[in-house]
Image (cartoon, rainbow, N blue to C red; front, side, top):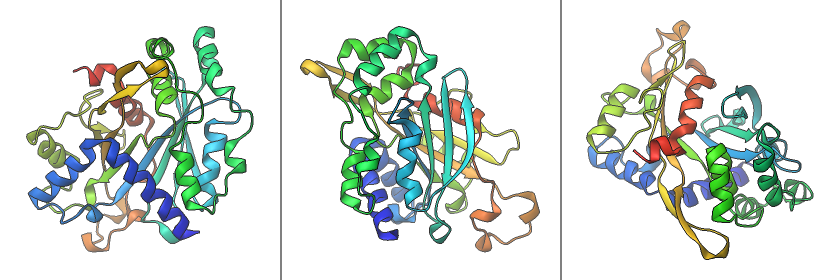
Length: 299
């Protein structure tokens, strides 16, 4: 089971890195600066997925994959303006160094009738939960599933209609379960780079474009979770009928989880995940979502 999970996560990261040039660019820049000696030195704080809240799909289907491997469902988050629901999932206790998972779904029933019709035109072709017929102990099968189309490639016209009402809907209708982002655990880096403020300054100095929605650094009310992200990479997407369009792909996130007050006296080399701020923050996540939005990609 553990080997299967590791293989699935490796497959996700491999394809994501191939599709998002900023991933390798972040790695190379960190290595050139001497922050890390290889990408394996980076702790992946969490990975994120986006889904459609429709029958046979959405979180109810998607979460079965990682819960099968021992992930546990945690807190719920609501995003009223974006019409989204999300949960985070903690890794198996025996593999607590693995990334957390943050998965969201679009509340399709809250959208306009026209947009609902377009989404259902594609997703209604999925007539049963595809995860139920998947051998979750077959890592290659799961890897292939997470990267294969679940419905027909949309037309440019349908994509643009969705984009006008819900940029999240447009992203999912084309990108499906592609990894939305992975996250560098900044607090585990060497001194001088192990706070989000220092790391963001480093990234900006190196020319990375960062999401400025709500400020470049998004801070939870308790100050314990501090996050930033690149702006999504634009990709040349081929739509139904052979039409092409440049659209938002995926991006890279950076997170600093500060030590909880009750553990302030623990020496740095003794600190583990259990000593730091856990979970997520809706206010931060709401702005991180916009890394794929035109207000950021069009800057």
